[in-house]
Length: 90
Image (tube, rainbow, N blue to C red; front, side):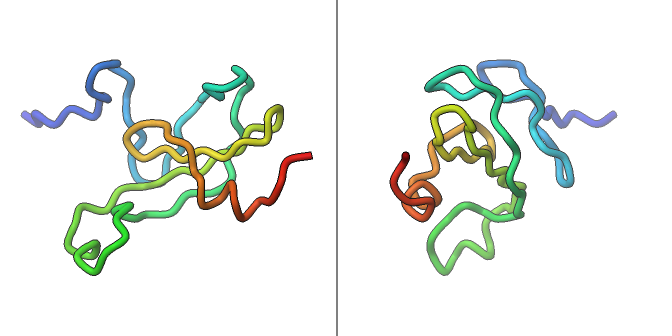
């Protein structure tokens, strides 16, 4: 029997596996449904040891309403790097 649990701690929501994207995420700022932009497999770490860390899919989302950028690995977080690259909001 497989005892692995793919549910997000604290919420019970199922975490997406490789090749999947998280469905139906809402923008925490305005409540609009987020638009999936891309997915890459990464540890999310900015250091040389990152290659030896567990690799997970990181899903990137944009909010069409308030123009914020988000990323989802194990939980939804703001993505300041993509936000800066996107430029000033209109």
